Image (cartoon, rainbow, N blue to C red):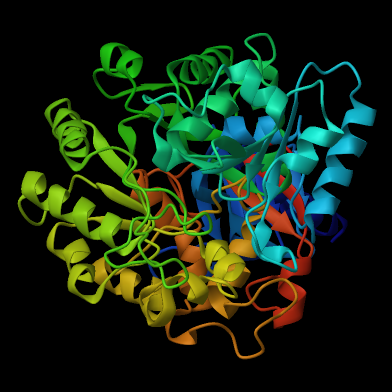
Length: 543
């Protein structure tokens, strides 16, 4: 009897030890969570195991803990877990640049802009020029585009260049204009890109001329370019972004990204889009991948922004008869760029805000693509699309890539620009129905980096003050599931990477985040309060 009493516990212990030894060793186990897999069934799980940077199993906590063992086990304590969020359209360098500039977002008057710039200069007295970004005259009492008279009086001896919220216009003081060597009487100057009154510049410059100002007075230098990109990367991690589409790159910026990738300093996964510059056309002649950087898309433009009346419309602006907006470059040049990209195996992503910009770009795409295809060409913003053009997204398999916070930023003044055409703006649900899916992003730093605001704007169609009360044009709101898919698996599909990332499934990259609030189920006013607790890329914690 004594022998039997001793043997029974020993046999049980042996069986337990054997079961432990039979468990597969993995690098990371996450358990006891509400895991939104965003798989094809939009199923939920509790746990997963990660090995060599990929999910190897997703299921219940009991299943994972019975099959796997790891030195690193995360107990999610019942909290939400999402796939790593993706931004389908943003600007990394500009984000890094804005971290070195005066933040003018939300300034409620031009005087507040001036005060913010003065405070910035006091904090940075050694700067040889001052930059700022984010001013929006639509937030001011008179809603008028400013001139530079006050700016030039306050800052007489130092160049100041302030970028509008949309990035398509700048306000420059006289010192900055002088430093640029511009003369209002110069016949070669593109008068459509600057405002001249009584023979002198008002300080407002748009589109290509604005780009020249931003380039000359950029606080990002060759010496701090890589560090600026690294700061932008960390800001992305803070908000749960694990992948981004960087939507306009000069050759030097692209090389800086590639340098960081080669040194394994760049953990963020970047779909990098060169601009159609002569240098890029000569040196970036075929798609390639280097570490976390993929280059297979060129970024083109058809027009400017609605707020500065630079978007290209079919009919005049309702609040400015005789003006239809600006063409970024002639249609024949755009067609030539598209054909070059097609011939060299690149995809195309074109900035289109106005209905004429969208319609003409889709027509050129149709000439080249002929019909349905799997090339994945894109229209960025697709902000105002006429009824006669919307079906062209489906006809030519064109991806509409949208930024829901643009809708909630623009909604209170966009009707002034468009009149009854506002009905054809921000029609995300109708665009989703073209292909059955839609990617979304923020366009940061024009909007906040925070992708939770993207989700909120897409679903509720309200700003962060929860206005308007019933939501804006709610027939084009996305469901919560559609909004989350647009920031994860559909964003990955837009870069042809949905087989390797974008959802929490076995075989895919272990990119995931945890948050303090389950924004998928939270009541409306809780959603924008959500904060990211942790961000993991390939199973490694980066925030």
